[in-house]
Amino acid sequence: MLFSDFFSNPYVAEELCQQAMATFGLGEQHPDRLGVNRLLLRPVPLALQRRVMRQFLQQTLSISPNFHQIEKLTSLINAPNHCRTDPFLRSIVAEVEGDWIWLSLEPKK
Image (cartoon, rainbow, N blue to C red; front, side):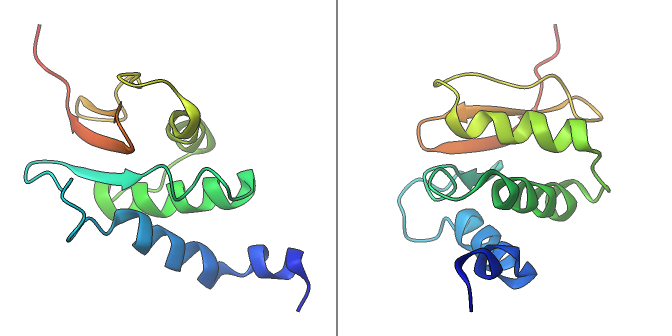
């Protein structure tokens, strides 16, 4: 199997998504929000990062995300702490906190 074949395998993205979302035993799980560990995604190619983020949005928000939604979430992988996205839907935003990208409700103004 070639290196490029490894990253184009859809099961690799699925497994990486499950690992990035697994917060049990890491001491950083948050009881009220869903998140993804961005440290696991930094070293992988951009195409695989996008695929993982697409799966994360599909699983957590039950939507079929478009490219813009996937791209704004992917951009948080290398963003500074406390960066956030504009709302995805129903005022749900993604925000960087340490090694994690968390989804949460945007506070009312």
